[in-house]
Length: 500
Image (cartoon, rainbow, N blue to C red; front, side, top):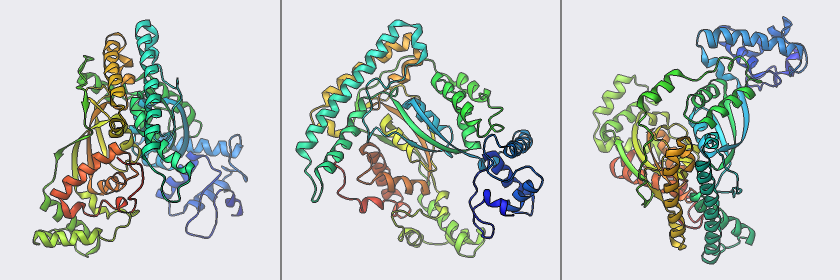
């Protein structure tokens, strides 16, 4: 049994960590647990006894590891691929670094499966380098569109740098140092604010880097999403991901191909590539409620769920009691369920029974913020076409720099429409962070507690903060007892940032 210590952290405790095994082998041994009374360590010991793993580390090139990988592959071939037991694939995890892809592609990757985890280069904290721009290969077939595209991207960086310098100077004059704040810390704080607003001039072609951690099923879903989409860059990225991840999960990624269903759906519903007027400047994000559940029914549903979980009642009894209560008593019970929430707590799982549908008209900058810290919302989203107008950051207005950004955005619309007739594949990459798109967000109350808590704090990016302040205000007016405990972080972070 001591040879097991090569692979597990201990032999006698209930909780242990696993190391030195190929990911697909780990997934298989976990799968054995579902079909065997033995535990992970016992099943692993059985593999060792049968000679499937030699003593020592099961690393690449090790004969035992290769035999174990073969067994794992056979198992996955039969159960995951043959019989569709894809939950087994969730025990195989990979970490992937991805560099030099566009912001358009990073968003598509993040939308491929919400069960993957990402950390991405932040344009709020770093200054992109001039020339770090993706060029769609389709541009090479038309010199005029290539010239227009390059000119647009060059001018985007010109405007970005002018906005950055102008905002930095304005903040240096207007934003004082705090008590005890060093000159360096003050500089970093105002630089961050300048980065945050100058980036509205950058396009979705701007390059980014990110780290991905995902299980086999989620990574596979994301790759199929990329393969089935309209963007050459994303399809190429899917191929590279498959090649690299296959080294860790060879069987799980063996049969990946584009989804004929998704591609057929896109062809059936395509509306063409006709031009669309951007509509000019907008004041900021817009929120439209598509589905706002009945307040009393929502109170009853939540109280029913909490009683089912903690009251010792079955569902029918819990619902009967909740339905017989006065609205004020229901509200009091709901308030008691969140009044002790701290900044880092999450509400009870019963909060997921109340669901909303919200139409958001948000800038691309806002959209990327929303994607980055989503925990459970689902999105139906429009393509980045620039049809919804654009957003001018308030601090850009206050610094007297709005004309610079507005002129550029009008120019970008003109160039985009010219390129649409020459090379439509490049059009999405001409959309800026300031341009808006429409997104339908289907979100439960539990997730709204997470998003409102995070995104209404003073440290939140101003654009997404406005959106969730609007959502919070509407729900405090319409569903006060339900949403009352959501906004927790903002009460302890007051006084941070540089305004707006």
